Amino acid sequence: MFNNLSDKLDKAFHVLKGHGSITEINVAETLKEVRRALLDADVNFKIAKKFTNTVKEKAMGQDVLTTLNPGQLMVKIVKDELTELMGGDTVGINLKGAPTVILMSGLQGSGKTTFSGKLANFLKTKKNKQVLLVGCDVYRPAAINQLKVVGEQVGVEVYAEEGNMNPVVIAENAVKHAKSTGKNVVIIDTAGRLAVDEEMMKEISNIHKSVAPQETLFVVDSMTGQDAVNTAKSFNDILNFDGVVLTKLDGDTRGGAAISIKSVVNKPIKFIGTGEKMEAIDVFHPDRMAERILGMGDVVSLVERAQEQYDEEEARKIQKKIAKNQFGFDDFLKQIQQIKKMGNMKDLVGMIPGAGKMMKDVDIDDDAFKGIEAIIHSMTPAERSTPAMINASRKKRIAKGSGTNVQEVNQLMKQFNQMSKMMKMMQGGGGKKMMQMMKGMQ
Image (cartoon, rainbow, N blue to C red; front, side, top):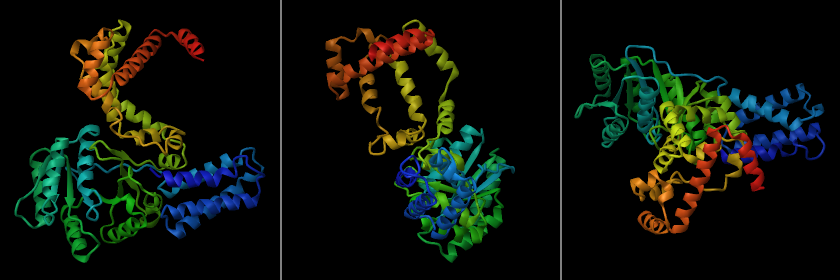
């Protein structure tokens, strides 16, 4: 996410991080590089210029030249201004109404239907809402089927009327159905086009007038850069939508849309899509995104994701097993499943301060645990619960069954044993033992 922009901004600040003398010329040169980095990220020229002018005024006002850490102060000023540029405060979704009606808008291919499913899943699991998905794309033959597949994935009812080509009537009937079946959120997936046209705008405007949604969200593919911002402006002129959703932020996005869309349409980014899975949806936090762009990571979001997957009862069971030396591969497998639920691996690494930069050229596969899982699944129940019984002949069988080799099985066994010892020490409060162990490893 934003790797290219992050690299260029880091190079721009390099001159102010103790390399050479700090002068007003250096500051100006740094900001010139910052502006160039923003333009390369497909940020609007006027916005990039205004941004760097504001940073320069604030930098000179805070006397960057005489501070002990001019580079750090400049980074902080840029971070604060990036946060403001992307909206400043986090803006939540409006869930008032009985039911709450959410209208999804956007061009074809922006990820509108998939995101409707993600939002349904988010509101169902995190807000405890009864959600109804509504198929109002009556033109694209596969649209309704796609929505039904998505609805089945997240366990949410999908309302559609086969043969009815009037999306306004479908939307009205769906709201009535929601009221009669106790649904408290209705998400309406509308038709998209390959480009903005009068017919499309008229249709979605009519749906908007008919159902009076509490939330109208504009879904935009973040990989389309400045084009996305221009499209958002066209939609906003007609719909006056409430917020923006940025999809495909896990792809090779340059970041222009995320950085400049708020400035152009004066509407907040409310959600981002960070992967293909139905759980890959995040509330947009401008301050956290600014930190990630500047390579500072996003520890708060990482902790939040970990807490969402934390099962207190399961943790107590594992603690007891560790205390009794009964921690086995089945327990290890459960821990892996929890990590996988937190999101795609590249996104998680990007949240660790400094790790994104170190791992930028490393291909982090979402199937990183696939080999480990295959090895564990090739073990018998007895072997998983009692790893000590796995001898040389058993390792050969496990390797053959998992499509790996004995060396890989040995490596997993070694890592598992080290982790078990570490967990045992932590469990017993053995800080001194751990320190001695670490000294012995040096």
